[in-house]
Amino acid sequence: MANKTIITVATTGAWPKKENNPNVPMTPSEIADDVYACWKAGAAVAHLHMRDDEGNGTMDAAKFRETVELLHERYPDCDIILNMTTSGDLNATDETRQAHLKELRPEMASYDCGSMNWMNSSLFLNHPQFLEELGKNMQEWGVKPEIEAFDPGMIANAAYYLKKGVLKAPLHFQFCMGCANGIPGSMKNLVFMKETMESLCPGSTWSCFGVGRSAMEMLYGAVAMGGHIRVGMEDNVMYGKGQLAESNAQFVERAVRVIREFGGEAATPAEAREILGLNK
Ligand code: ZN
Image (spheres, rainbow, N blue to C red):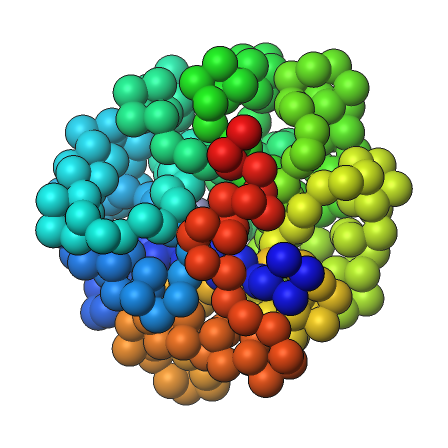
């Protein structure tokens, strides 16, 4: 498995709209079709966000349910791992941030291991009580947390919850690089995140993504350093400078090429399940 790289596609996120890029999938139907196209292209994990009918981020469990049902109805052969957000609407309650997990029991879900100022405009609140409750619930529901770390302090916070039993080893991290108010996306910082993780939470697996200008550096960095990679329009609506992304699959195809050029292979969902310990 050493040369297998897991590609996660984050198709939609909470913010980009059709005016930012007309190719962002927004409805359950569009997201289901998009996830399938990305799976065909080589993605092993799909990180899902939902939008309401006005296109705003929502934690509405019915939208998650509809998307999963459409995906399974239309594409019964698609075995992609579903990773649902728990942070798709800054105004959602602690309860609605988990309701879809309780009902749908996805294999994975995001776990944002600390609070921060979001995009210089609002508070991204992950209260200690919420994180304790979410961690325990995810264990009970059999949902593996993908620990999103926007800075090294969030890795230390994960180590604390690991010690406390709120999280269970082996952990899987997503290093979110280059977000406003988070750690800037650079190779030096990626090395530091990886080393911090290895010293505080040994035996963990990791993935990363970079927003904006750091996207390619983080892609090549992850592949070179033996990590996994996330791509997609949640993080970047531009494919390159001055070039809007045509689809999420376009990002996945590029990641597959980079991994192959380096001498590796994109992990299949079955291989990703083994790497992440999802079968246990
Ligand atoms: Zn997300």
